[in-house]
Each structure stands twice: as structure tokens, then as C-alpha cells.
Image (cartoon, rainbow, N blue to C red):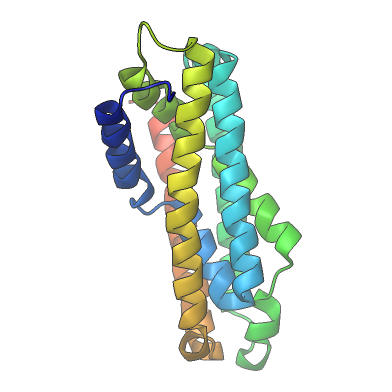
Length: 213
């Protein structure tokens, strides 16, 4: 027996689809690392994102997310750390975009471990994901169902499954067009675009959680 009714389950899957289809830092990392370094690195990036979501799920299950959300200083600290990390990744992308054309392809190649780590930290250090879990999950909890922690774990796993399907598809599609996008000049444009988007996300994160309104 599943912990939620089928109509509620369908509604949650629909809401999850809308969320995972919205582009964010995770999407940019998957595209950049897959195009620059191939399928294995792209899938490692996808795995890192899911590890981050699993971390947020565990935090929600044990009540840590609620504590963080109720503590402005904690949210601000996470936002600052997340923004700095995004800015650092953006700087790395910009730096790759100004290297000599004959060295761009080699310079943008990364190892799967780095791709996994970057995706994990980008996801974990995003306070919006913390608030997302707190805003989304309670709407689908049953009063007379399984214990709340078990329901939260089930919904979190389901969200990870939906996200994995979409982002794996995205990585495979990016790998499929890699032979056309892998030229040094295109790699340079991809690096610049990725760097600009990641820095923009960093600025928005600071604006939303740190800077006074």
C-alpha cells in the first residue's frame, strides 16, 4: 500500500514535473559537463544532483529543514555559501572561455568525481530547495496515513525518481549533439553562457536571502 491516494500521487508527480522542467543551476551544469566532457561525466553530474535531493529529503524527514527555515541566519549562511560556490563555478566557466581555442576542449574536460561534487554542493547549498521541500511536501501528506517521516521519505524518493528520469534524458540528449557542439569555438560560447548564468543565479540567491529588501 502506498502512503498517499492515487489522485494525490498523480498530482504530486505533475507538480514534480513542473519543478524539474524549470531550468536552474543543475541544468546548466549537466549541459556544460556533458557537452564538454561526455556522457559519463554528464551522468555523474545527474547523480550528484540526486544525491543533493536525497540530502534535502533526509533533512526534511528528521525536521532539520523546518529548523533551518525558521532560522533566518541559517538560511542566509547557506545562501552565502551557495552563492560563493556558484560564482566560483561561473568563474571557472569564464576562465575556460578565454583560453586559446586549441586548448579549450582539453581545458573544459572534467572528471566524473568533480562533476558529482559540483552538482551535489550546488544542490545542497541552495536554500530555495530547502524552502521548496517545506512548501511542496506538506500539501500531499495524509492525516490518517503512514507516519509523517515515512510519507516525506516516500515523496522525496518519488521526486528524485522524476528528476532522475528527466535529467538523465537531458544528459543523453546533450551527449547526442556533442559532436556538433564540441568544436572549440562552440565550447567557448558554452563556457561563457554557463558562466554568465551561474553568476546570475549567485546574484539572485544573495538578493533573495541576504540583501535587505
